[in-house]
Structures are given as structure tokens and as C-alpha cells.
Image 1: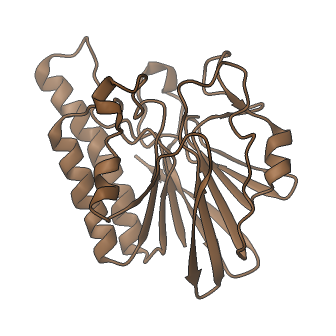
Image 2 (image 1 turned 45 degrees about the vertical axis):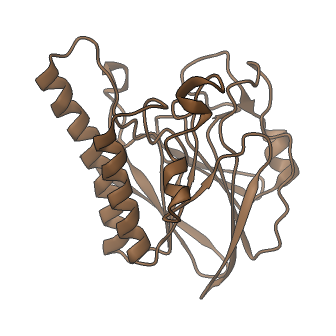
Image 3 (image 1 turned 180 degrees about the vertical axis):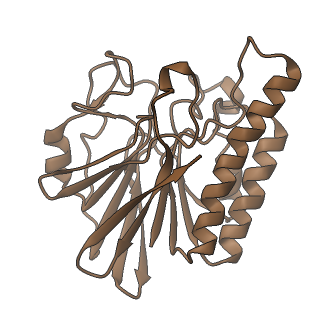
Length: 253
């Protein structure tokens, strides 16, 4: 069983909120992430997969960074393997910003999570489960890729019974709101042919098949602005029996 989430945007700033309003709003965002973690533990998941934009900025305040660390430690203590990658909001736009490091790196340093921080090549880790071997790969967001370019023109060919790839980009035909941005093409997905591709960055959840690849877009765990007032919020739960991948979208209030 794998829990797939993205776009929690912890520590988001709203410039028209009073300090007490902003604190309440940030608490709501943080608690939604906590509910996803709690679900993973309560349902005895094997994997916790995060597709980027855990934070809304590359230099969040200490309270949300500490809270996430506590929740990731809970996953670790419950023997749930955790994989994170870096989204466009987590990633410093320049190497000198925030020391050139994303906030997720601290969790990798303490060995509570595996962080796929490389934005040029897919990093992969293979696990053995009761259903078979599972390869989890990740390609973090690259702020230097020009608009319209395809960031997935790379290789991903793990030797495993099930392959899952985590990304944080728009998908051809499924944009994140802007028209000019890097876009993963259907052709590049067909070329590397993962069994499952999980994509952050797109805030409205969806699921569809593209050839032999099952695409999972978890969307956000909280509406971020009035433009998202009609969005459902939640995350996906994936199950695999050694042959078929089942999916269920779990809604958050």
C-alpha cells in the first residue's frame, strides 16, 4: 500500500491577512499534511510518496519544518518507507538562495526519508515487499528548464516488478494553471514507460491511463486561494497485489 500526496504548501504567506489570521491559516495547512500521515499509519501503509511542494518556499520557518520532521519520524518508527522530492516552491531559484538547499534535505540527512533531490537524472531505490519488488524513482523540479521544454527526456528502466516515478511538472493536456511552463509530454512518458507516474504541481486531482502507465495526480491537501474553491482536497491510496494497481482518492474536509 502506498499513500501519494503533494502540494501541501506549508508556511504559505498571505499578504492581506492579519497576523492571527495568517497563523490560523498556516495551522490549517499543516494539520492537513498531518492527517495524510496519520492515515498512512492507521492503515498500515508500506510507502509514503510525496510529489513536491511540501513547503511554499525554500526557507520556511522552523515550526512547520519541525512538525514535518516529527511526522516523518512517526512514519519511520512505523516502518513506512518515505520518499520525498522537491517541487518548484521548495526549490531555490538560484543556487545562492537558501544556501542552494531545499528544506527537505534535512530529513534525508537524518535518514528518516529518502529525498530525490536531483533535477537532471531520475534517482531510484528498489524495495522488496510481500507482493514483489518495487522501484521508486524521483525527478525533482528544475527551475532552469525553459518554458515549453520536456523535463522527462531521461531514462528510467529499473529491474523491478512494479515501477513508480514521482515528478513535479505539468503533464501534456493537464496544466497547473500557467500556459508557459515545462511540460512532460505523452511521448516521453511512453518512452520510459513506468507502471505508475505520480505528478505533483497540478492542484486538482485526477487519474487516467496513458498507454501502459497509470497517471496519478494527488492534487492539493487544502485549497490555497479562491480560484480553487471548487477543488476537492485529499490524497491517493494505491494498493498492489503483485499484478494490478488499485487506487482510491481519499478526501480531506
